[in-house]
Image 1 (cartoon, rainbow, N blue to C red):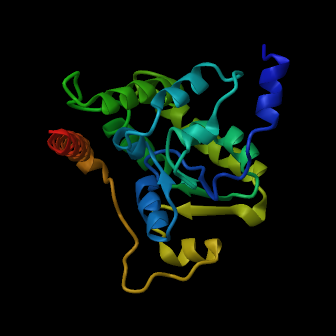
Image 2: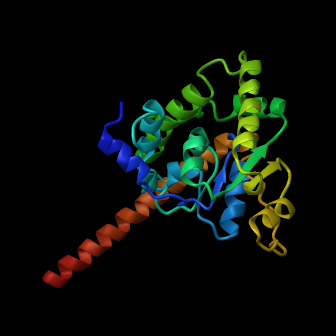
Image 3: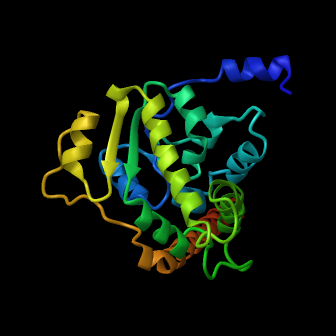
Length: 254
């Protein structure tokens, strides 16, 4: 049970810190939407950012899912971002929408059968990731197992639980449609692009730029490897920069 102090903290929490809030489950074009929003000058949170951004704290999302009645520092969770799509955000849609009632909500959808097939082949388990991978990725994977694999997707045997998962997928869509103000909601089907997104956001359609089409299921393993390579590269560059700075400081003192 929350203490009076915790309740006051939640009630006084800053609101409308997200301008755009994605409501669609993973594997509904969320990475493409993230990249499209970034092209439109938003800074968009996505599961990939939790893996790659060293300022991200995956444990905030993990603890929020395990302890739904406890207070959460959502401002810290989304520090540096003004939009959010994909899991883990979608798992907290109701809470985030309550804190961001003026946000433009984009509900990405696709054929339920194809969505289930994509889930089975991709995000349910991350192939080839082991304890030798960068710590940020391992922390994100631990969170994703709690929030997505064991939480939103309900654990193992996603193939055998097809009807259950499709029902959850469809129920979530209807729930979002029921609670979001119609003028603030865009239902965006997989395959739609700038012509659907930009008018909803009140922005001009980019000229000579195709709408992104990223993170296809068949590329998922390669995507993970690319993320690992990028994280390792960033870490090495940070180490090199720190070493250079220290060396320069030593020379100045000599």
